[in-house]
Amino acid sequence: MEFQTNLKKLRTEEGLTQDQLTLLVETSTDTIGRIERKQKIAFYEVLFRIARYFDKPLEDVFWYE
Image (cartoon, rainbow, N blue to C red; front, top):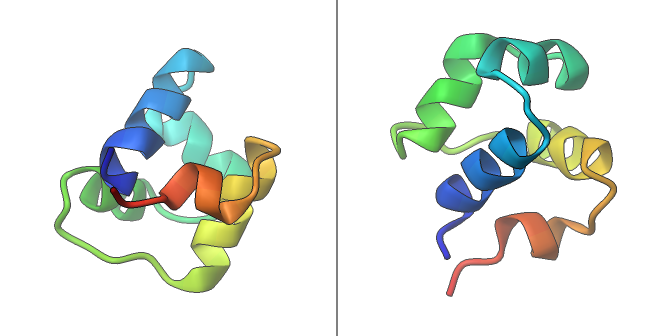
């Protein structure tokens, strides 16, 4: 599963909107939306905060098969 798809899956399973995740990981709604739409590659710091929020290692959240 591509990491963008996995991010959206994790977010929706938690019942979070993009706006809510944005506040939790301290980034912009535009950034989360563009990552999920495969229009932007996130900086490592943002990826780390997302993985930390979901309490998962980076490779579990962003593993590309």
